[in-house]
Image 1 (spheres, rainbow, N blue to C red):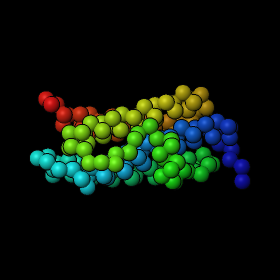
Image 2: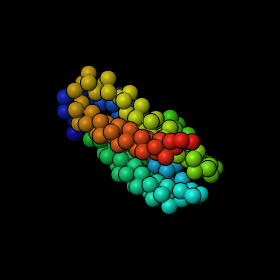
Image 3: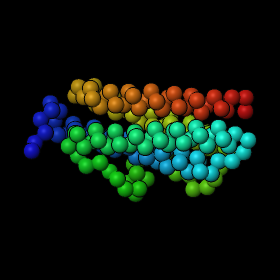
Image 4: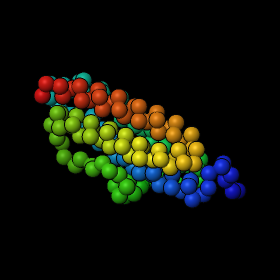
Length: 157
């Protein structure tokens, strides 16, 4: 059945392309955060272990929301690591960096997701896609706050 929500198929496809990049960034950040949760060491172990767990759990819920929005717009959501690696602006971490470097990488990742989300807004404004704009506004708010909290751990270093 055809989708008739007041946004053309071409514009929906363009939105989905942006959301697919956002989903990819979010999933790669989820994986990186989960990796760091498992592998963090040092004097801040407990604090970081628990903080990273909160963050990867939040990211796991986020990927579902983003993928469901893609589906609501009438397109399949990407679901393969190879696609995420190609579309993401965030690079995976294969090693085990220091706790401080983990924090720095996660700040960079949170900010990257924010930039990806922000880049979709011009099209959303043009086609009046308020539901996607609302989703992105919520995501940006969470990522900006998380980046601030992570940056705070680096104060004085």
